[in-house]
Length: 238
View 1: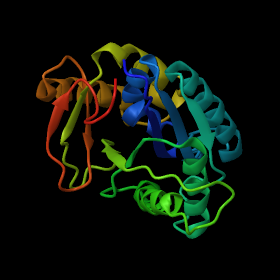
View 2: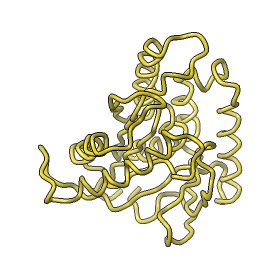
View 3: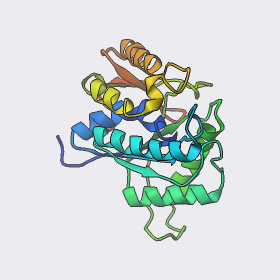
View 4: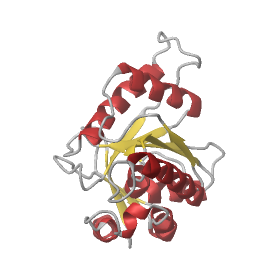
């Protein structure tokens, strides 16, 4: 391995989104000695059948920290509420400050074609936060940091006009990803009628077929990028 290190930042609308979408990629890279941080804009606390949003928020934060430990990543929670994630400069600047502090070399987040308002807002928040973080003329506590590699992750709620152009072999990190996802009660099937783990396991198999590996994650780069199939993210050290 070369001496230079990568650092992946995955930004999810709710705790659990980052892990289910890109946890396997994170595990792949942290196992190779690279860094990772999972940023949760909200806990995703309003979906439990029996618990109050306040109690479930605390549970989700604990689950998120445990999942990050499994993935050998850092977990950061911003102070916003599920279904009420604002699309304003306050949250954009908060995320820009996180980007400046963590200095990622690549960012993975939601695609904008979503049925979920928080997911769509996250897409737009991340785009502006990347811009604000990189612009030296915007004076904040920390100096500017540019992150020029970005990917959009595959999420069952973000499927409108989502086109995979990057296939990453996650065969070696598959079980670690499953262990991380299983830290969340949400993915056990006891909270939601949606069969999360069945869906994402099947998706990993299907993307593996197309990516010519046992298991793979499908990502999308900004428009204009070429299709990539391989053992790692295009242009990234592993």
